[in-house]
Length: 126
Image (cartoon, rainbow, N blue to C red; front, side, top):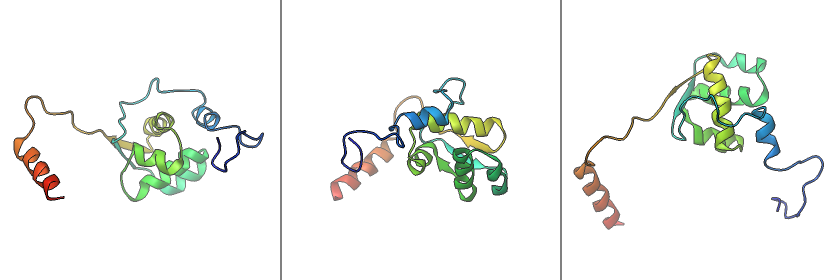
């Protein structure tokens, strides 16, 4: 069902899955950087270069000028699937427009007991 309540997709709006497939030119997560939904990306090239890029690439470059954004935030703002955004961001990393920082891997061993106790105390106060 569409957002406007109708059951069918019109010729002008081919549906929710066609656009991400077209935007990534059929690529779906192969040969992309190791990006997580919380990976932060930031632009390293000027915003003026966004005019020379395809629409979605330009939008990502403009969004990441002001502050680092996560893959999830970019996907939400562009209304695209996370998998599609990973492909687009990987292309921009390869072209030198963006840099990224993945979250650190989880620490081996036991979790920090002080942190867990602080979270538990905070939940109890709610």
